[in-house]
Image 1 (tube, rainbow over the protein chains, first blue to last red):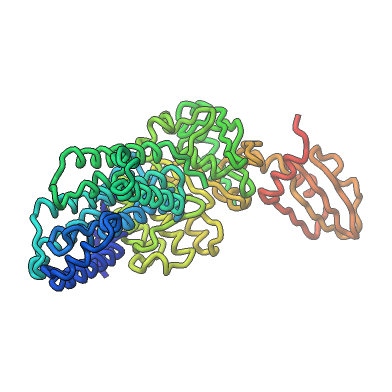
Image 2: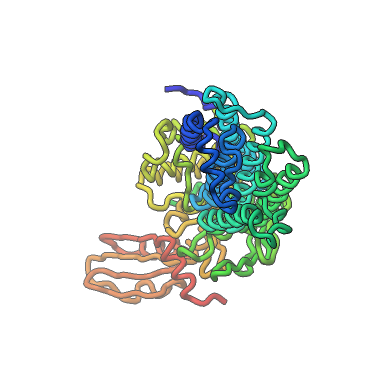
Length: 271
Length: 316
């Protein structure tokens, strides 16, 4: 039996990462599996004129809704199959689930009492927990980037690093926004279920605003209110990085981090 | 049991001049919960090196007070000072000097006690592991099994090590022995006694009166959010009554003890006289010594009885 103390638990950040380790591994396996399936289908679609015809025969509304223009090229395929919904969704679900757990979960399991009795400020607790959330989302996003960018060409899927990175970073920041929102609501209410429900609902509404604004004319002036638009709605796979959209996402995450810290600091942790 | 040695130490160590060495000072503290309950207008001072027992039924407000001290919750009104520092503004500095075990202890279920204790040792200003292991060995705690497989007693031991590690100046123990087997309870008593012996301050809550009487020097009684009384255990003992059974060779005179000031009641059954006497026992013993007695029993009341006697009778 080792008689020494483990080395990976010296801070709230490290302990959070230790606790999420197994779950994160599961999500990684899921994302790898999803990406490999998507990639393995691509060679049969790539350069297939029949597919292109089929897609072009779709009504325009459907094509816009599911983002299936130039479906047979690498960026077009990724846009409609990976980044139109699934990849950002997977990252966001992970972030929303864990974000609420980091604040409200610690409270519901009553470990918050002993944690906050240590000489660590509440601000620091939240900041470190958020750093853990951002790290975990980053790990998942990086896995996606490596799979699509490095493994992709093996399946004849070629996409430039800049557009791919722009889409990945957009997805990651979208997920992190809602993970942070979930964390903030959890910090303010102490309820995991409430935090997750509200965050997921807002994420869906924003997705719909951005997507439907391509079809519904009156929604178009409002699409800037949607984080989805700033993350993926502006089509990073065609246009690459856009500093303006990126800044909106970063600013939004920053505001939510401040909100989470403020709510957590003001809370009464009664039993 | 309450030893006379401890009582002496109490008398010599705690004069009235120690007002400046209050480890903890609550002034008119109120906390109301939206759901009802809380505490109202509590004022209390705890001296350095004191073991203070906080007594009351469940839901009376004991936990609320302890959570206020830790800044887990904030008072609506009133002022709380620990080590002369403000409980809100200087909370981190205060918590540096506190060990705490909550009444309803939550542990990180996916971690082992070794991992949990390492974590808390680091958060508490990097207490070296060599200072943690003696406590683990003393409590005979198995530290490499996942927490979720531990018994209630072993879970509490994890909390105890976390609270006592690094020898904090002030220990806040919220119902530390509740629901544990007698062996673990004894270990907790031992830890508290040692902390007190080393001059550290212990604030412990309990709804078991005898237990508090065994460990504490002063006791505060809280009921429905109100701090009803704060008494030294020795004073309580002085004010409380004793039950005395005296057996004689023949039926005794019912007025045998009637000259005693503290006599509350006396009755004769056969050759036996049963009396309830409050206050000093010495006059009783002196009187009994004048008669030919075949058997004698003097029963000391428990803390519960003390409190009941004390608060059933109006004190001028």
